[in-house]
Amino acid sequence: MDNHLQDAVSRSNTLTELVVELHRILSGMDRALGYHGGDRFVCFYHEPRALEVLWRDRYSYGFSTGAWITFMDDVAPIAAHYGANVGCQGIAATHVLFIDRSAATAYFAERTLAVQFLSRLANQSLFADTDAADAAGFFERIVEITPVEIDKLARRMWNEKLDLDLPLPVWSDAAAGPGISIASAIHHP
Image (tube, rainbow, N blue to C red):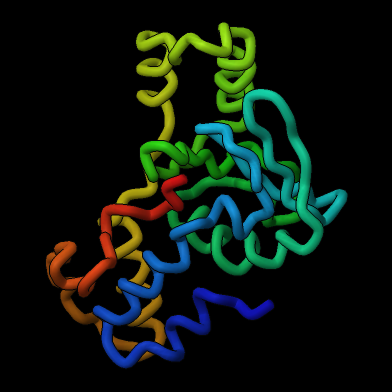
């Protein structure tokens, strides 16, 4: 598997193309990392001792052989941009990529905090929705991967490609083209 982010940089003729491509790469990241369950929340991190990406939802956990390549190529640069340790530097992960599949959003969260949140959800009734206060407290303590930050990462990668310092334009969904939403970074089940 290729390094998708670096390939996107080399293929893009404009910064706008690169931004759209980065958002496309992030779309469906849960599936690309080997999660095929149906839970709303799932988290991922790299386990350097096993050289695998582990995923966890409310009820189960596992790994997908080969997903580490996608994780290293596509998630690690974004994690580094946010200062999150998701296990890609040869040491145990202190953070996870946390995806809310229903809201089509992604975050970086402390690993223990994310696992505790998923455990609390698992102990709730199958028919009860997430306790609002519990969820609010959790989401206040994690960092969302925003379109603005992805745009900043794209600019940095573009500037490294061109060795220039160009101003970053303001992006809108209209700039992305038909059928592409810059605000939507994750697969919506």
